[in-house]
Length: 330
View 1 (tube, rainbow, N blue to C red):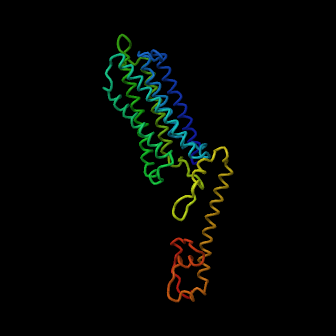
View 2: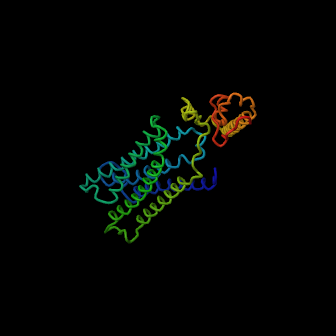
View 3: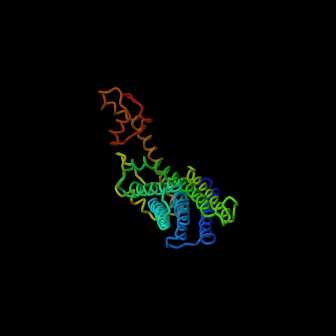
């Protein structure tokens, strides 16, 4: 992996910032606010920031970069897909519970719902995140979608996932400011006087921004992308794959694959490719040396290498770069 040391530093930093963000959220609601409960009061509303930071930001960020972790490259891609989908499912559940807590609190206190830009963008992000998860299950996890559909939707899936993640962080920052403006009023120290709670929550916002920046950076570096699996598909003449090949390769357990196995498979694959090229060049040399061939092809002055190889060894395909006309008698 190119730049492994830098990737490791960024990963550890992101995990540390994520844990600190969750810890700061808990300190905020237990030290400066009323704690957590489910009674329709202010303590029920406090579930909203805690669950959003824990699930919709931290867990979603880990789900985004799970494919980039080099330790998972020895595992089957199907297993990583399940981990990616599972983390996103947990994040979605926590986000929905946080929305229920907000609506329940507003209804109990007779506060209008969905009047602020924070609520508009936040609900939109949850809806699109749910659609993203459902489509991801249907297209990339279940074995029914054709490969062409997966390939065409993959860039959209990646872009929309990163966009939703960045949108969630921006919405959380708007929510922090909105909550502090409403909560810090007279006779308590106002928000514009920078009381300790305001400074603490502003620091929490900075931690989340840096965490998001690290996740987006790691997720968009092409040299940290998961490499394609070796020998996951065997090319057939019709462009397909043999039955069971893909399933068997994806179900390979990561504990049964070590570094020596990967190197051995790579060396074997390279040896096969070299052997095929050697066979092609040998066929061409043999065809050119077959003087008896001209007696069987008197009706044609020029015969392509494609047809010569076909008559000599059967339906063997030769790349066009090697196909040079061979005149009779050569």
